[in-house]
Image (cartoon, rainbow, N blue to C red):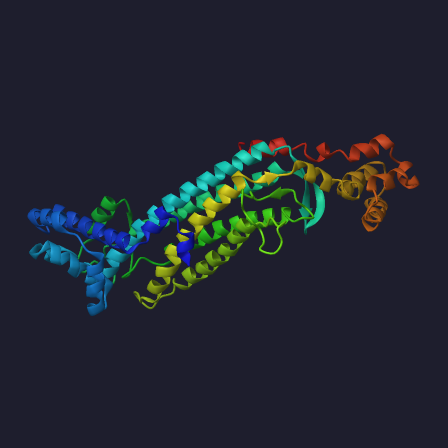
Amino acid sequence: MIERYSRPEMAALWSDLAKYDSWLEVEIAVCEAQAEKGLIPQSALKNIKGKAKFDTARVKEIELEVKHDVIAFLTCVAENVGEDSRFVHLGLTSSDVIDTALALQLKRAATILSRELNSLHDIILHKAREHKNTLQVGRSHGIHAEPITFGFKLAVWLEEVRRHQARLAQATKNIAVGKISGAVGTYSNISPEIEQLTCAKLGLDAEGISTQIVQRDRHAEFICTIALIGSSLDKFATEIRHLQRTDVLEVEEPFTQGQKGSSAMPHKRNPVGCENISGLARLLRANSIAAMENIPLWHERDISHSSVERVIIPDSTILLDFMLNRFGAILKDLVVYPDNMKENMDVYGGVIYSQSVLLKLIEKGLTREEAYKLVQSNAMKAWNSKSGSFKDNLLSDKEVRKLVSQEEVENCFDAKNYLKNVDRVFQKLGI
């Protein structure tokens, strides 16, 4: 089912063809390094580079017999290279090729993910600026709290995406390492100089020290970073889902011409895109657990991690690529309803301004406890009567009016008082 979410560029990175291409890239880079050090003849290197190729179907055919993927690959390459194939894979173990090639694939996948994350950043930035002053009620526990702006909400998302940009860059750096150190990592049949030369040719760092494999905390960090990004997309999508509810309707996913929301109820316009993103984020989080389970292996290596990675690495990168692209499209064409936001702010005659009234009464000399009791009683009257008005209750409350004028009460209900530092927040973020 993962094919449903595959976008061509990312999916191509995890094809068998791409895998074998990466293996061959590593093998040739090792041969080049060995030829530079005089360990294999230049004529052999020229022949290897000219003739080294493979046929995916032939590799699979050989693997059915030998039951070893790298040996099958090398056998296929040897069939094309001929006698000089004896210099291919010289002094290496399978994981030298597999892990170094995987680093190449992950680095390339990270380039795609970084591009998509940067695109989402720019979409959020544009929307935050557009709605910087679009008034909206803030909510805590799902309950009306105090005024914010929709742009402020988006600015919070923007800063979160920026943290993910930094995390992804760091995780990419830590995964972009190769190892050409032999059977248990001790360079018994190959030298550290060959490793350094090979990795430099491939645009990778050489692992500081390895066993037979690159240690899997690196891969776990990368997959966990993907899960973190996915979880933020889940958070953003969940917010849109809540705000699209019929009784809220402050924003709405784009609903295209001809789209249908329900087989039974023609009126439905459901946040299916955001629900899709929330669901897929669960897979990314599950994959992160599997990646961490891959860290503790037996001694210098076992291959219990290998089968897991064949699933979680392609799936996680493919899914996040899809999710970033899909959420970016949703947010870019998001329908925003400022009038509904304003209407929701005024529910119960402005109970969201209770703190402003509380502070004004304290300023007039009441203790916090006295002021709180007075404000809460008027707020609860409005809340419980459904159609009541907090402001009207205050204006008709004799105890309140002894202390504050009508003008002072009205001023407490000015949303601009709550938003006086929004500009400063945007300036802090450089937007």
